[in-house]
Length: 247
Ligand SMILES: Nc1ncnc2c1ncn2[C@@H]1O[C@H](COP(=O)(O)OP(=O)(O)OP(=O)(O)O)[C@@H](O)[C@H]1O
Image (cartoon, rainbow, N blue to C red; front, side, top):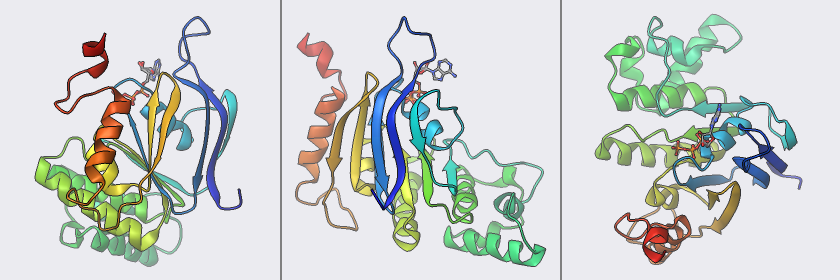
């Protein structure tokens, strides 16, 4: 497909030899230019493994992966270098004239509403500020593919809400393709065009989300999609294991 940013064909990833089922088992996936995809799955289902493959951090040993050159990752923990100031962390790895690089870093920090912390040391940042710095560091590279590995998981509930809408705004402004790994069904529905569910090595759901933006939990159809995804994950409304109860 012409506008594909990512193409996986029969991608398989094993950690323990052929005696046990692979973590990723012949995954086929296409992500199109500008598409916002969320990846849900239970703990240990292989979400991070899939994200690492898309980031080019893990070798492809079985199957094929076609990835764009410009990729950026935001991890659950910000992974900033404590001995470099915030703006310098954002600028790391950029090439070109020093003044231009600094300007680009400051502009990315403005976009995540963090200009006032540009010369701060990372250890003085709050959790939300540190994650916004990570987001600025990713954005400044103008990625075609932005990979977000549970970037809000360690934040308090209010900061998480704010970060979710910030990510939605930044995506609208820049339109990279996004893969967001999350545990949170509502987060997936608040952000993504498409929600994938990974289980037993397979993508068992590929759900198109046509809700209007900006997304609201109160929107018609939101709850039906939420219940459907919880069903695919095998969890009931209260977070209990529906598969165990049925057994
Ligand atoms: N480097 C590794 N060596 C051996 N096993 C690994 C390695 N990385 C991941 N695994 C195994 O692969 C499986 C999937 O792990 P992964 O971290 O991708 O799951 P996940 O869906 O992201 O989980 P969580 O939601 O808990 O973060 C797990 O059983 C894990 O133990």
